[in-house]
Amino acid sequence: MSKIALVDDDRNILTSVSMALEEEGYEVSTYSDGSEALHALTKDEPDLAVLDIKMPRMDGLELLTHLRKKTQMPVIFLTSKDDEVDELTGLRLGADDYIKKPFSQRLLIERIRTLLRRSEIIRAGGVRPTGSDDVIQRGDLVLDPSRHMCSWKGQHVNLTVTEFLLIQALAKHPGHVKNRDQLIDAAYGEHIYVDDRTIDSHIKRLRKKFRETDKEFKEIETLYGVGYRYRDTAAAVVAPGAVVSE
Image (cartoon, rainbow, N blue to C red):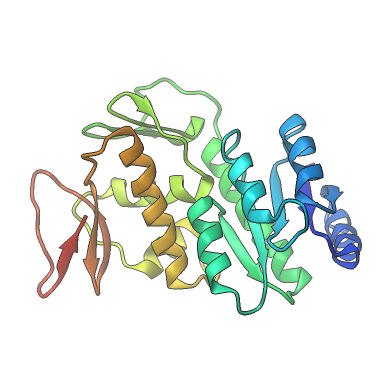
């Protein structure tokens, strides 16, 4: 039974959503403010957290900042209808997904299922030897999906589920351009609608994390008007008319 943490200062949302999730077979813990949730979630980590952004005492953005120092568990943000700044800030802080209020409970449940499924796929199979066929090595980059492990030049890089799936999709085929729709499918699955800027925000955060380890990291390239690719050091081919940025 997967454990879900629901953090929102709206009691009606806590009651109705927790009931819907429990009917789906999830174990649900509810919290009405970020300070209360931070203490509980760092003591007993759930499988996934749903955080409201607008809360008293400690809002969802501050809560996520604290959580990301300790855990990479999947996080979904609940955002105000027209607050694009909060959405982008949340993604850059390490949220995996966001849903606008007012929202459909069925949509939220589907997004939760998707995130948990992706997390389980990454961790499936237990610990395998470093030479396993599932391990991807591209120069200084090593990805081991079975252990949700990413390293660059021998140093561990902490990635969320979404970030791991994105770098995995790019690194599998270095030099091949992935457009945003392909990356959305890789990270979220087919038939899930995600705004293009969500992928852009995740890519920015990926670059930032690698550059905290190595200031010279330039492997993820942007081809404006086309998409993204993992640099192929053996053969750098630029699409006609595309502008490359690192």
